[in-house]
Length: 452
Image (tube, rainbow, N blue to C red):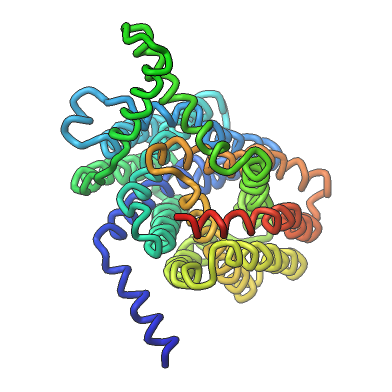
């Protein structure tokens, strides 16, 4: 009875209005992975591009791995008119959504089967705008919850994950269903998707801007720098601003954690979800080659997977707050690797819809839990004064592993001569190095948590 009472109290925390805002912005983060991810992959496959070409097209997502380079600007640069009206976080999100809406509309007028250049360039615009919006979205979540509500950080990670999968699954299912209609081509699908992006602008404007001590702390750091320089001319003020904006966020991270543990953390973040990225990059190609239609993929991969992800993500927020982040990451990593073997089984059996549904459900359960604990982990590591910069650094490093390394996923399948079973078995082994690093990080992380 005590367990159910605790569970009920934990679930009631999801009624917090801050978590609803975080869910909404998670949706915003997930949608671009339809625009240049799942929907684009299906379009490229229908246009008869090779597996290797589709895999390399996905390297566009590499831009997410480098958004930490301009994250400090999102922390400090004000956008004329918009920042005054909406605040630092929402102004950046709204501007990036408007850019994405225009690029999505334009990409619908391209033909990747005849010329991939314009499709790729517009996809790069969407990826860059989305990666920039993610900086502000993640910072919004960290700022809105704050470090005082420690228990809510895991719940915030759960709602962000649920929102992301909703933004990835529902519009993704709509795109795939529409593409199977006889009177709808992919150009029309992208017109619909551009309208969805515009609707999100109206929603984001209604959210509350988070309160933060960010500017106060940054101002104090600038003052200390000016005192050290001993001059207060415009040149030295500019030097102090640049130092606090561009260097201090990263220096503070390694100063707080130490170089050895800091490098362990960075390497772990890069490697943790590489196996999932290899699977995800080739999943649509695999489903279509096995014999499933776009509508089958929409039903089983998007809708069934979405419902399971929402439920498990919310439960994961409760479990992560009870189990502890490190233990949750270790369990999630092992479970994630194990469920990849379900796809190896599906490859051997063929287009069995029952097995397909089971594989999707198990994959979403384990991936959701691992993602929630992973997001909570790097959220704990971000300092409140540099939440955008430090979270972007860690998240972008995770994207580096998932996008840069997984760009070779199509080449790997071709090298295996289309042996999908061996491919999926290989993805399950890729998590092992990160789990070894996690054991080395664990003690340091627990001590750091106790100090807060």
